[in-house]
Length: 308
Image (cartoon, rainbow, N blue to C red; front, side, top):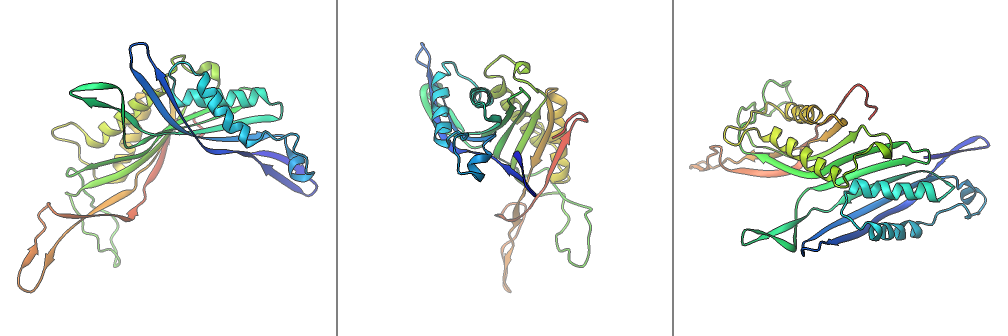
């Protein structure tokens, strides 16, 4: 936040434009189309104190201008690129073009459009809406200091066995039974911070961060589920979360830290009976899915050099 000193006060301020939606289509010579849909949030930290205190707007970058710049820069990107690279391009523009702007934060959520398969082949220009969303946040100062993070939003994963919960604190208020057999389900929100601290230090491949996003998501999935046949046992969401975070940190040296939020979405065993008989007798087969209330588990794993 930009900070200004007033008599007797410290005043912090920022302004920007949220939810600027843009779709970019790239058409290759072979007839294959590529497309992205991004929702862009822009925040500028600038020297525009007179707009607040003196009714002087001469130092404000209009939020409508910010919106238009999203479309301009999207049109100028003639080659396919990642959301991370597009965020950096926007941040570079605002911090270099406007003298008043000291820093910019660009946040992008990418909608999960996926290419469809028809008759066993990928369609050249057909897409369907997927599930989880790719996110990124870039902060760039006028002097070139970069903070770059990526993430995944709404990664819904579930396994029907190889999970339990035992040995937790019990008191007179505890009614939850211990179990070695339960459904484990969660909707992962993850964000990871990269080690790159300047634009010149990032990889030159314009799709590097798209590929890294897919790689991180694969590691999260594989660690949660385990091998295809036997799986891997989860003694708690906490344990599984740690192993997922640890796998990402160990696999990717350019990731400094990762934060995981993993709510425990409950599937409750169903038993129905009356004085005559058991109408439904639970046998690891019938459950009532519920997401309210749910357990809330989150943690951040960082290398010692990370300040996330």
